[in-house]
Length: 249
Image 1 (cartoon, rainbow, N blue to C red):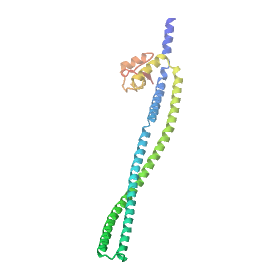
Image 2 (cartoon, rainbow, N blue to C red):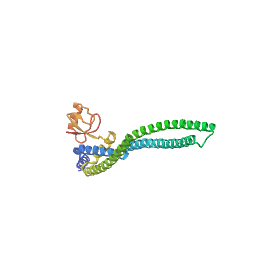
Image 3 (tube, rainbow, N blue to C red):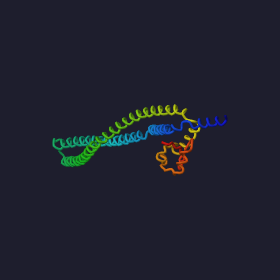
Image 4 (cartoon, helix red, strand yellow):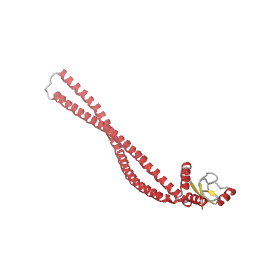
């Protein structure tokens, strides 16, 4: 009676061996989904896209500030030139309207007019330089603004896509885990314990198919003697090399 009970207990512990490959594939699927979820949670793509937006907008902001500075300088020069021109016009009026008769004073007014004209000419040269700088900056600003707009658009696409994919991954992960939970009663505890222990040791692969005498996990061909012994054994059979559980196919 005790021998019969022992055999029953052993059979119970080995239950589900033929479905281990199915469980393994399900666990690998769960692992891939969990890895993808971690990637999405890490937001590597989002961080890169956000960094690109920040960088592009910073360049645009710097150029706009420089452009404002040039525009302000241009307006200052234009105002100074207008002011000097008014002074020239006023001095020339005094020079020719007969209000000044003193020759020395007339000579002084003429010298002042020439000095003002020289100053005005220098300011006009500076104004041309500022206008050329402004034109160059405005030409550079347009493609920079287009790049920033494209970066913002791409960020929006990634944010939308990542959010949508995250929902899909979460749903698929929930389905796979529910499927796994439903499978577990099909396995004996001895089989599950060994399988889980091997999965921890062997990078997630605890069971492998044996095809034409070759372990599909480590890809080693079993020796004829070992293979013959496996065929005659009952219960859990393991690879001669990697020690994973083997399933004959």
